[in-house]
Image (cartoon, rainbow, N blue to C red; front, side, top):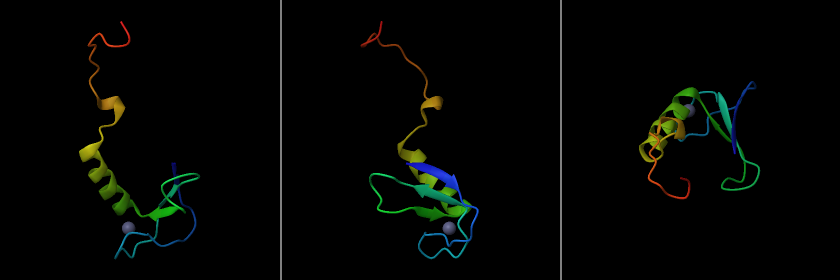
Length: 70
Ligand SMILES: [Zn+2]
């Protein structure tokens, strides 16, 4: 799944949003049957929501607990 910048005119897919889409979430294999188009505002909101649950790996502190690697 990749996010691409949209450079053609298409409406944002978010419910009730009337903006033109700026980004497309493109899916080739799973989860969605087609592309999802979102404007800047909606993708920012979505990112905010996702970040409640998933912390980007680069921001995670690295702890060595002596697991699989030494
Ligand atoms: Zn939108």
